[in-house]
Image (cartoon, rainbow, N blue to C red; front, side, top):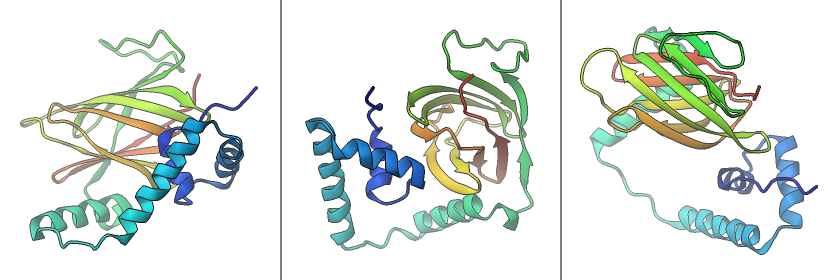
Length: 201
């Protein structure tokens, strides 16, 4: 049986050399005998990356630069800050745990719910290909008006995916490796870490 077609994110990471060796070998093998659609996608990604690298860089506004720098430092060097707190797992469909008001999935996805200093947040991870899941979720802030929240999905301390919630706390991230083991949430001075297990039941 032919392996599942790699996600767009997988192909992008493969083109840029960011996939772990085993996954990179699988994508290489798939692309070597790929259908026309996959071949066109890979070529589009290569052209895009080449064009992006050839474009002159523009200096962003100072305020944006400072915010991006703060986010980068916070995501890559949490030990530099003492305001990180750990989220508590409330519910996991694979463990038979129960939490009031939380309903489990009817399919083979993973449903997780957490309590944290930031507020409660839930996420659903559904299979999207070999070793990959699509993640949807919602963050309900404990205090203040809802604002966008920065999210980072990490694997063994390395950033794999980053996103930002909508103003009402919703988020969707496609092609997240199942090996991701942490989710970091950052909103203003509040920063939370949650241990993740995205492997299917």
